[in-house]
Image 1: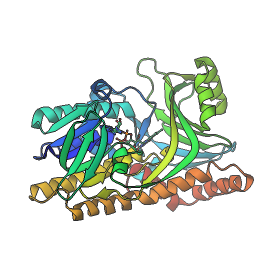
Image 2 (image 1 turned 90 degrees about the vertical axis):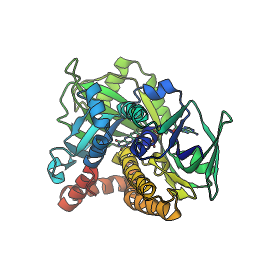
Image 3 (image 1 turned 180 degrees about the vertical axis):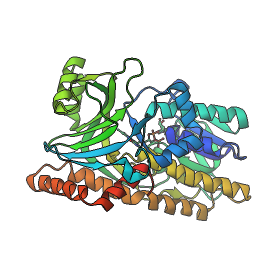
Image 4 (image 1 turned 180 degrees about the horizontal axis):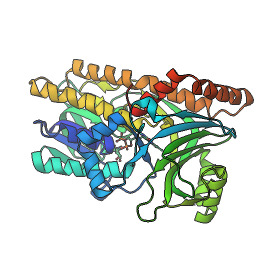
Length: 403
Ligand SMILES: Cc1cc2nc3c(=O)[nH]c(=O)nc-3n(C[C@H](O)[C@H](O)[C@H](O)COP(=O)(O)OP(=O)(O)OC[C@H]3O[C@@H](n4cnc5c(N)ncnc54)[C@H](O)[C@@H]3O)c2cc1C
């Protein structure tokens, strides 16, 4: 047997899982199609990841938080409050941090910084325990499992065997598909454009989700630029793909003017200060999370619409659950791929993710439907929610991770 556990994909989920398995006597292999340089020094990808308090604690436990702060002291921006707006109305439903029993609902940090720190942590674990092998620039091309092992063929022709195969290779996981697991996919017919904008007025660390008519805007408050002092936010525009491509082609000045207009000048003049990134919006719910000697984690286990900011939060939760099961089984001398163990992981992770997956898909559909009855329903729902504290407490608990 080459490995106890072979992980397909070294995104944030695959790297965090490998890190949390190191030092426990398990031999772990990680296969990643990108070259080593891209994993070692990931490029900015536009995403500011909103972390729940629970995920922030998990990042501390994994050693990632301190690594990120050591590289960039202002990397973590507090997410104090959140507001939801509908159409041109100035009315906003506000989720106040006081509903969460913390001084902030959660934290924001750039995705590429998470990836970089997760890679550094994997390198440190490799040196300390010498139990992780990273196969960079290699792609999982074929995979199947039988009662005794998982068998993987890489695109280079190399063949590998492991006691357990874990797919962490994105929501469109080729490994999951190779194992014969189907998935329900919902294509929202929209894409997202993400970038960092500087703006004249301060954001007071309030996140915005603005369901306008014909467009959805989100604003994720970042710390002021330490070099210039400029107020900054990650801006997310949801529109048909061709409209976003046209916006991406605008020069920086025209783009700044266009976003100032789309944000109704509410934060004053806006200016582009990063590259722009497009993502298609597709929600994915796999039919199974496990099969004999196989499990899915990260986006391969649940591909969330980003509007409720939970993809990576769920990823961390699943990793904690699966790694805990694997470490305990190994310490007890049991089979790490025992069917009961995998079934327990599947049940727990489904229970933790399915309600919010379904609610997110519903909200995303309702608030991107523009015909008149839907507009009225959207407005009424927000006003009702604003005056219904239990609902707001539930949203605050979801954002901070106490659910
Ligand atoms: C616009 C946007 C905003 C988001 N905002 C938030 C947020 O605020 N909060 C939050 O919690 N989450 C958020 N998310 C979700 C979060 O980014 C994802 O959940 C997270 O990045 C998923 O990590 P992953 O490792 O599972 O998958 P990925 O990041 O997709 O990584 C998969 C890896 O597998 C590799 N791979 C693929 N196929 C193969 C193969 N055959 N062989 C080998 N390697 C392979 C890929 O190269 C890649 O490195 C957002 C997502 C988007 C798109």
